[in-house]
Length: 336
Image (cartoon, rainbow, N blue to C red; front, side, top):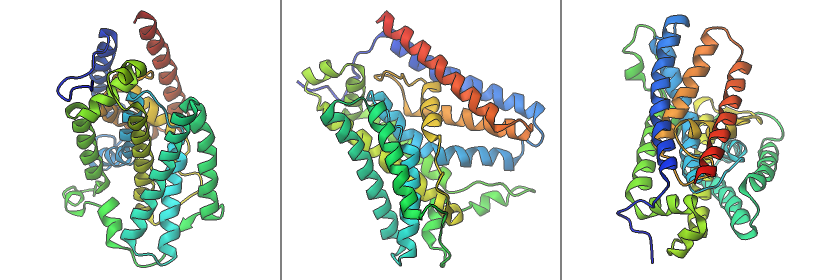
């Protein structure tokens, strides 16, 4: 017996409430943050500042989409930041070796997808919790990035390929509409497309139902004929692929990348998801909620910077949000 494509797996009312309140709460807080910083932060409500929020949120959001799907399936990937660095460094190494831009792009993505698949295989076939397994690969993949870059920045000084502008080039006609040019970039479009595709896949396809079922109750899903292992392997692979895409896209913006790129990204991605209603224990959530979550965090960071407040304050707030989400998720689990 397989899970129907037309109906979402049954989840507890607590999980549904958490998911819906999470999206609504995040959206309301995003509006409040925009109003707050608009009043108190100099130059916040300017095209440049607002476009920076969208651009930087999109760069991180490429990863958040994959992490959201994986978390709904009941797993974590702490190696996404390291995988991002591998993608950027791999792309740079291939370009410097004379590989044309498009094949270099595809090979870098393929390698990062493979690293994601390795994460999934370790979790699925050994039973090691994904938190522990990907904590180990986080260190291993960061080592790969350092090896690819020789422990230094990776740069590309050749002619700029058209692919750079496609991935993360300035949207000049839009930017020039303002007296002070904005910073809207093509990565925003890629992020929106991926968010829509992820949403449709999650809520309108059989595979999306399988993701919910796998994260909600693995044994029940397996008893209903859901290929649980395959679902997890695919979600891990997608997460690795999107992390690699984020790394390549970041490299395309300035033709350089540093060995620490993506450090701490795993925390930002997870918090973005839980702010938007994705349960830490899996089985409930949405891609659009995670999208609102990353926009909220990026707005918070941008506002604090414009107010002259240390970035460490932002990191502290993110940490507190994660702790509170763990408490709330644990409470929901006890009531089910």
